[in-house]
Image 1 (cartoon, rainbow, N blue to C red):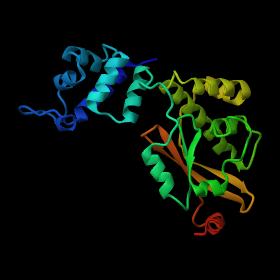
Image 2 (cartoon, one colour; image 1 turned 135 degrees about the horizontal axis):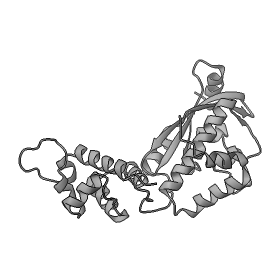
Image 3 (cartoon, helix red, strand yellow; image 1 turned 90 degrees about the vertical axis):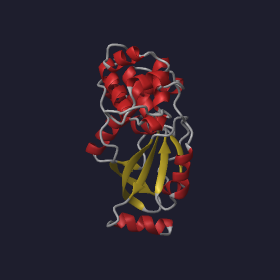
Image 4 (cartoon, rainbow, N blue to C red; image 1 turned 180 degrees about the vertical axis):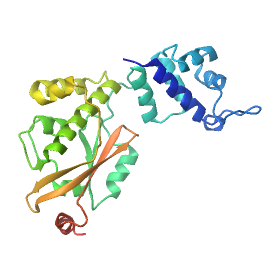
Length: 271
């Protein structure tokens, strides 16, 4: 359920952290703080000062249009805008999961050559990767249309070359469910996402139970064992980095530099 009080606090904190010059406001007179005045933000967003005051106090819930206008006036990042939408119980304006690499994510993939990296969208579907990831063959071929979706592989796949310890596996499964739940909140009009969640609930009793228990996301980092046809079994650390532009995640696969796995990895990629 939307939390007007938490949303109001977030709007007020963001306004007070925004310097007038950041949003094109010329300051007049002495200021008690360096942030925007309430009347200045109200004018930028096209709402009354009293209406904004009530919103910040949690006594008035903004409409999607007003929230969008406030976000534009404050010039918040995509991630901040989505956070405000989540607090308000609304989908972002687009209502659809971005499924393309942002320019920054594309540069990241292109510039990192010797370390395996893949990029996932908000549904944890692979949308980009580099040659090292391809050589590592983290993604086993499959005829299923959802072969690129990590939750589908983990909950429905018939096993494979990736193994995790019971503790890591349980944490990773809770993470995936929490991430899909958060994505469904941000993109409630995305039919493909809704279909994925429905299919997962039908195909996996474990997923359905976790979904019903609404787990919260924990650490994104984990360790796995990969059975590689050339390198044998290697241990890899999986570190996830959030990319706000495009609501993407970059997963970086590395071996402990002191381990034999790292030596095999280096030899395989010619490092």
